Image 1: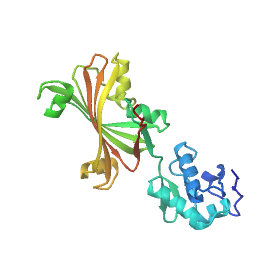
Image 2: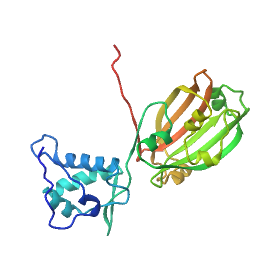
Image 3: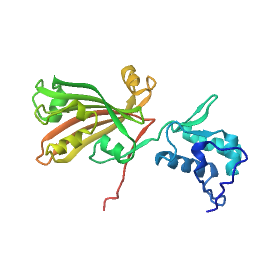
Image 4: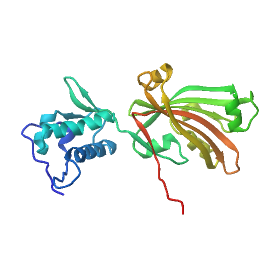
Length: 261
């Protein structure tokens, strides 16, 4: 791998000045893709933070010894992913890193915290409500009986990423809004002695309603990922039924697939 990080004749943006890019000109992998991958890795690992400026394409092309079309293509690929944005009079700016969540029985809060995404929570609703038909079926309670409904807006780096709606048996645990704003639901369950064992989960996609778009800072009709999950403890009791929606521009699920012998 040959390093091509030549010093620019114009001062690079402070956000990039401390970064080294290693590009292999003899590789069959296109140079624009190599640059895009390294920029994306810098964003994901926090070396480039939301709000950081990358400078203009001329500065980058001179610094890296690349053509402007190559740099433009690399930047455009990250603009298309929603990681960068071009602002008139400002330049190319980091928007956010995309949340990549492993598909396992864990809470969104714990996953975001482990990834260094600085999660915060806004309580939208916390109330006792009669169980609808689907909620009752999921939790194994009579339809119309009282259940606890939680609706929370989860943010990373100050921007919304998911709207979480959860239903729980009313006597499962003491839910305090202050704790719900500072930690995850599953962590509260574990602290209460509840051992999560398994879950049934369905993943889908649909367009955002006007209300959802307003909460998630998206355009009406924007693509959303959806997840429905019923979680069970080690006794087989249903302890939580969730209906969550995620901004597709900021969120992905990671799958590991194994060949069955």
